[in-house]
Length: 315
Image 1: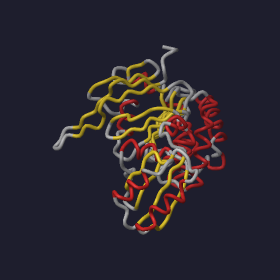
Image 2: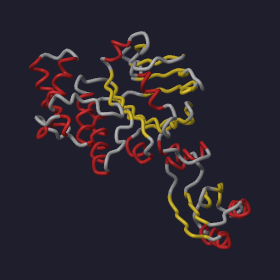
Image 3: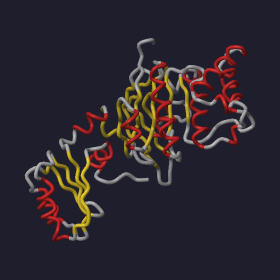
Image 4: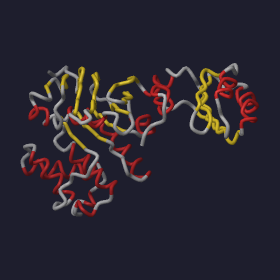
């Protein structure tokens, strides 16, 4: 059991009865390694939350298995709950309690004695920079502060794996950056983290490995760098043109360094092996088609996702 991975998912499916029936998961296979931050990346409705729901014993699968630290999440839910911490998309703090009380009573719920629970509460308040808010009522907290308290509470009983479901959804940029820093710091405490997100930058900045998921299937798994290298392109060019069509796409695709050119809603997306000599030829080709703008950037996880699915992310 000690050598078992923190999370091992095998051929996981989930179907919801209709009408119409919904196949939320279609044979998911994943392994999360000890001590890593692993991101499930995909648009809303891709199956991320359902996967986490099953792994945290809140949703029953239609078939397949989920093992947490070697324990079967379906057959041994009580034992699994002791190994996991969970932060959902929604604020689940006890509104009738203070920040400190939310942490303290969670510790007591998981069997810590009063003295140990008070000591652990103090540690968490300090770690998450919440000491000055210890006596504040949970209902008065901003979104960023509430999320920090929820993460602190989720690790209070020292779980081996922490599940974060869309942890920064709805947060302002400053709160998001602060939360990223705190999540990254959990690795030093030996806590494995699985987070779901549809923010590309979040997955790129935080995760050791990423699985891109859509329509209930894992499309690809690897480090952010591996996935971006897999495109076979070092430059991405977004071209905005009023009259972009297949003729323009063919002309651009024929340029020497272009690997692939795809029509988009506002023009073209161009993947190029090199930017040497690319822009002059591209501009010349696009000018007759009402060229409005050219933006050049390096490949991102969003570029990988779009290439895999053939469309932009859904919000």
